[in-house]
Length: 437
Image 1 (cartoon, rainbow, N blue to C red):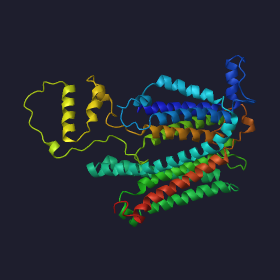
Image 2 (cartoon, rainbow, N blue to C red; image 1 turned 90 degrees about the vertical axis):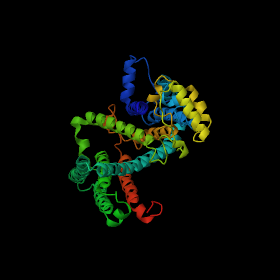
Image 3 (cartoon, helix red, strand yellow; image 1 turned 180 degrees about the vertical axis):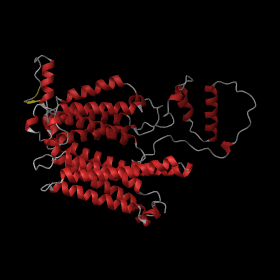
Image 4 (cartoon, helix red, strand yellow; image 1 turned 180 degrees about the horizontal axis):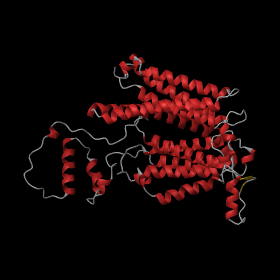
């Protein structure tokens, strides 16, 4: 857990730094700190804006790409390369910072291609992955609660499931009403369409989730999953309409100047923190990504389960007992001969009890870093796509995602999320053999 948190913090710091570099504010502060001795230039242009954002995120992306390659094939913490994932934090942080600095020496022509095509494709893959994981989380949450209710008949879990479902539906309808009141005035056809489509599809998927045919093929489907998908997609829609430009006077939040700087800073930090959390969760959600994950052990045969009664205390040490047990398992065919060699470097100092990945890593290390690579592309794309800063905001903090492009990405993402969830409901009905029905 500490390893994943550390990588998430690095992503958060890198994303925040690239956001700050989006405006001249950072340059002025840096020059002021050096008593105007340093004048920061990248070729013929200042080191802020579109190019600097892609440079900083490319530096971190390259860092994760190298780690992904180096960690290919690591399956247990016994592999010597596993230390690259969980240790050497000092050298890794220095390497990350070096990569960021070196990106400012790469020709700008490279980043025009990278930012326009490669980063955009990676950003879309990251978004799609996040939506799949959200639907997977909705099903996992509901199934977990139902299992707890069936196993223990707990009133607490029953109340939690019902309460959370009602709460998420109430939140969805409240957000919908607020959007109609503040963001759907006459002339705001984009907002009216997005809000209405979201409300209509939310009602449709809720009805489908409790349809008798769907219940027959998937008894655990229901309103609990629909509520989670609904509140998330409604939030995406509300975020889209509240962050669009105000050229058509459809966003009253932008006209509220009193708290402009505070709202921009808080919004940016929340956005970056959300991306860091989503990335970490996606990178370790092996089940949703089709990876088996976890520890894998060879089951013992029936003969191997036989044992005799122990009538005296063992005289051998713990290390010798373990070696004897491994030898017996190898002779019975339950383990390969290499297992005895792998245990030679193990000691009896208690470290084994703290290592929960000796039998198998909890997640795919290489895939973990590939997803972080995609996250850096999403951050760069979010910050730079169709930059359109308010003239009054020059020299101030730049708002994150306040473009029509970002708004439409969120709206379409909500529709895609509904579609993925709808497919998860009807797929068992349409392909019963594949789902064991």
